[in-house]
Length: 257
Image (cartoon, rainbow, N blue to C red):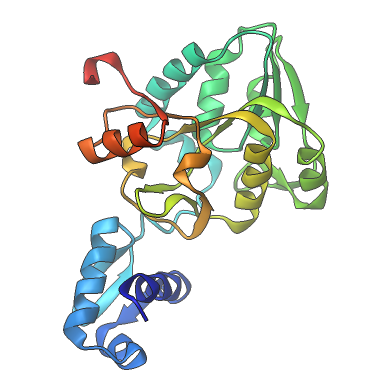
């Protein structure tokens, strides 16, 4: 088993069990405890775990799939406003916009609400509520209401999403990684995002600086499935070079250039 394969198994284990023990992992993989410690050091650097004596526990910040929408909305609120304003400049009039249920995308829609000539298609109940006094045309997927995320899910939402195609998809994520790509934390919503992304001509990812160089529970897509990434500050030179090499547009505040 390669290190990459071993790390993936450890990620799954710590997500499920919330903690891991060095000696147990060393016996499981038939490697030295020092090898496992290096693996856990790598996962700690990614933000997934916090090291403890004899092992590691799931980082509380990384275990966010059950955060309710209001808590997510308040987190990094200033950064989301920066991203929202940058996103507004990228969107022309008379377009159709597919939107996920993330708080970052809802922030972007709030900035767009004064427009009159665009259509928003979304499975986000919060987005529908935020645009109730807007002149934008709003289409909801409907489905089963998920109260923690203020979004619609289930077979009705999936069927409706599969029936529409948009000019642009706006979506966010839980983590970005140069090697693995784009990650999220909720399996069902990840499936909805995949449909939304695959049915858009242009795909714009909204991700604040805290999402870079991290991993989350569910793989969403490769980096090159995205046309544009909008963030609140300039990422590292490694990210700038990698995105340029893939032809991905990187948008961040001018003062960060």
